[in-house]
Amino acid sequence: MKKLLLLFCIIFPAWCFAAATKDSVAINHFILKENPFAQNEVAVVATDSSHKNTLGNIDGHFLFTINGFDDTLKFEKGVAFYDHKIDRSSFIYARHEDETGTHSMLYYIYVGADKLTLVHISWVVLIAIPLVLVLLGYMFRKFIIVAVVILIVFIYFNYHSGLSIPTFFESIIDGLKGMF
Image 1 (tube, rainbow, N blue to C red):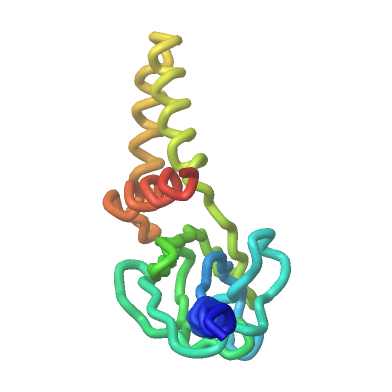
Image 2 (tube, rainbow, N blue to C red; image 1 turned 135 degrees about the horizontal axis):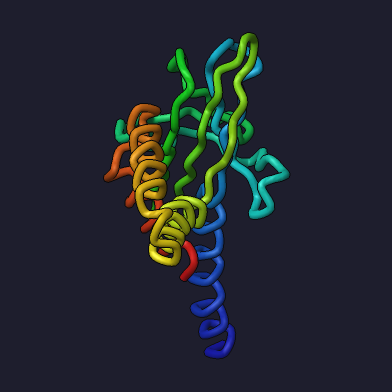
């Protein structure tokens, strides 16, 4: 009888813990896509680690920070609609923070005549472009002026399209955190 009671005392808490963790749902990976139901709007899609399959079990309200503004998105079958119109081509920095960590993505959205084209920008590219320009300017002395002009144009383009310096560094730091 004591063995049966001991077995029950061990199995019941483990079963309760497993049932409690089964109900918690986390968004570890997501992508942005063009909203098929509204023009010039995007949808946030919860995906698996390969970013190919939508997670249909994601339902509920989740807090996202999009371009520095907190917004609660309602997910249904793994898809939430961000209902703000995108008038011109710009950057969108989407960030989701939960108990499993911080997950963020940087996209450049090109507004065409009838559709949006979303381009994911990796934090490696954000580091590589300025570093390559600085290294080329350092290696070729005659290229210094051209490298400085290209770097200024790069910074101006990013700022004019909505990618501020703090967001630039924040996306790099989030990318580095994601490596570890």
